[in-house]
Length: 624
Ligand code: THG
Image 1 (cartoon, rainbow, N blue to C red):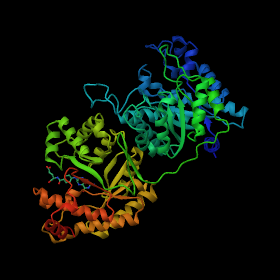
Image 2: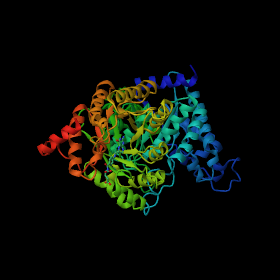
Image 3: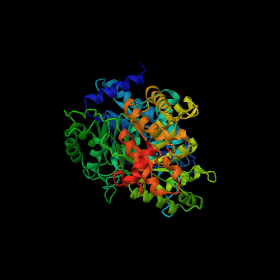
Image 4: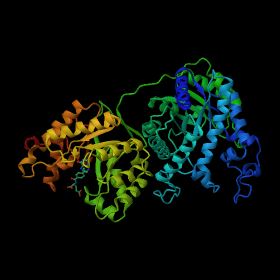
């Protein structure tokens, strides 16, 4: 066993047995040294062309003695875990000082320094092993919020740039010896998803893995992240990281955000951490919560069974950490919870699909091939009106909205990015999860890079063979998306029950048993085709779909079934009352067979029992 593997084993073992303590603020202690420009520069940057004072991460290189001393002070106060001095060690953050080129070095050396201090302490007291958390900060930019109030779709960074930043940070931290990777002070879940993507990509590229810790910030008392998600919605967005520890740091004082912290804890299925500020800075820039305050509050929180790791953030000192550590004495850690394997999506709010869920409506109207009106709006660049199409669907009961920009006259990638960035600024729309619908993978990927929630990819299939299917499914796992899997293989779309069943089963085997895709995130679409087209072979299409649905629900555990409902009535285009009746009868039978969701016109769903008897009987004939 390598040294790092055995330390990870020690860490996970320690988490089982007791509440661990993580250190407190780095910045507050650096302040107490009253360092000057010359300290920040050191010999290496003596002639550098911009001011460097305030670039605390740079001290790792120029005043390592100070950083070492701070690490040691927290170890002396009883911290089991110390955090690397790398909060701003990303190219974007260092770019403020024109030092983007040393970002990775700062991470590597930051981790080496913490490693050295922690290992020396462990050697002195092997009974209490000390660990290094490699800090990956958020960067000063947000991927899902506009920097310009007059242009809600604008962004000053994007997913790809963040992934590049976080990938370099990850490589630096792991090379330098970090035991865990700590994606922290998250205020925008899309930034966090980019960090998760980068870390998982690094693991895949190198085979060198570390446990992940994720920590979100509640900046005010609204119970939302800065980018607007509730705690459970946030968990759903990042759960695909399979973190060892989830938690919260920075932001408001514990007593003000406690209900949200508890909600996050209840939503998650891993260890839980809290490292809070000593309140918000007062008018003198000082923090008011004393070590005694934090001792009392966190002791009670731990006693109620919420904590596995606890410590401080802004304004806390070794005295706070000592008091917090003493408060944990003899209190049992939170046992690892287990959660039902159900599909957990999110927009700004969570959306869960379980056995008790009624049929899920996915709004079909934001589709340039499925709606002449929407197509015209997008081609005319009238995104305001296009947004109201999305809004109306949510108001009419759509629980997810499908977005499709596949149209020959359009740059689909550009259109989907523009539209999704605008949607992200409309809380009454983006509170629901998004289904990214395209037959082009690069369009789907461009869409996923704009969504902070947990979305659905529509779709992947074995159309181009198993290898491409595997590759795309793996990508969905890194983006954290559920998937619609079409019953489509190398020979084409499945049209009979036997083909539908065979393809769905083979897809399931590959996804679940081969690559470890979570089965509760698979939504099979066994193809809804038009019936009553006048062609004899088409007459059994609805029945084949319904039987395939029953098969999937019985044979492929936790997987769901969906379909494009309006397809079934294509031969009655122009006759909406008949189409609605067909949809209603079709759904009546398909839902009975287990269909979980459908892409529908949410405002045009007739109720089966309300159909005139004669019409219903005719339609029953057509469907069955
Ligand atoms: N499975 C999956 N995804 C899908 C489909 C599917 N995405 C697209 C489509 N099929 C589902 N969406 C629609 C949207 C609209 C219509 C049908 C399916 C539709 N539109 C009317 C028409 O064309 O006559 C309305 C026209 C208009 O308003 O201009 O029928 O099967 N996974």
